[in-house]
Image (cartoon, rainbow, N blue to C red; front, side):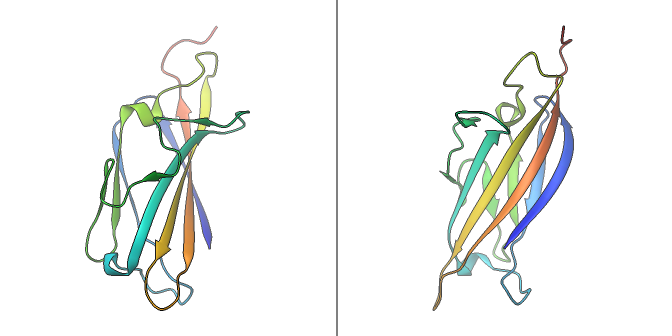
Length: 126
């Protein structure tokens, strides 16, 4: 399963992003049913892929600015480095965050969620 959400944000803005995952039956996945959660954050159309703030399949299971409550609500405290402009010549950049969840239990399923952040450069671009 894959969901894509899109947001316009300001460079180096501090914000929180909440998400939940549901299984194939639409039931919210609880923390007890999760076995792994990782986050990748990269600059769209970069070649080679430019990961941002060392978030390359980074373990975020209650680590690295991400918390998970018992009901399965995931909160990412987005850091200023997550929304820093990577190329000063860009007026707007697209940073893509992908959360990848692996569940535990009798059968393991993997679900992912993509978030596009359109980051506005606060510095003048010539």
